[in-house]
Image (cartoon, rainbow, N blue to C red; front, top):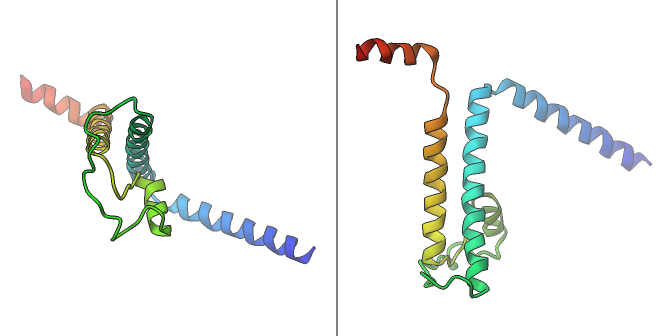
Length: 131
């Protein structure tokens, strides 16, 4: 019973500290970082989808290995698994995986930049300068 109570109190404490820490971060910075992390996650998922299609024999183009970094950071190591989860790391990716990862990453970054709201003064300044 004491262990359960201690766990509950510590969990509440960690939650409070996390909340207070996130509240102090400027919203713009917080969303910029989370957007970047989600972009890497999406690129990794797209590359992993290509891997699954290649393993199933559905996609065979560009199937050769782009590089082998298994001696440096293996997919099976703890650090390799964390990188794989966060950014889609693979120690022996195919060329198509690398291409899909890069295209997905660049597309999301470009669309994010293109769709970003512009400050009201900036849009008016361009209209005046164009006249």
